[in-house]
Length: 152
Image (cartoon, rainbow, N blue to C red; front, side, top):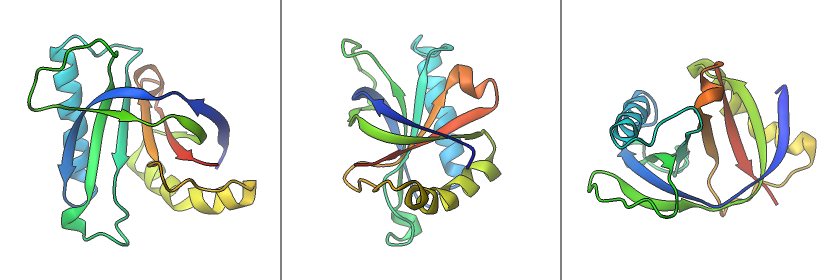
């Protein structure tokens, strides 16, 4: 792991689409769907923040029951009227942020490396909050994304 920072991420209001099933290629399709929805609602620009949230551990949840939420941050006053997209919140707090290359291989490698790296750095994973894959549009345009791990 090369680029690691500590960040206090604020609580965000989100619009999201949930994919249920094995993690992988279907998550990519859900990501495309949220971007398409956001563009059609004038919510997608260089400042947009998209999150991918694996809600379940595939080691303890059957693949067909794994939930993956693809989210876009929306303002607190944005009126969500589309039944296709749900409303929720991402709980803020202290996160260890891993900046990685925006490739499937780099993301997969990061998921394998983050827990040993947390131990090496002396951080304790906060299991009460999900790990966030963060895709800030202007960062993705430069081929980077982030995995944000909640810690105490």
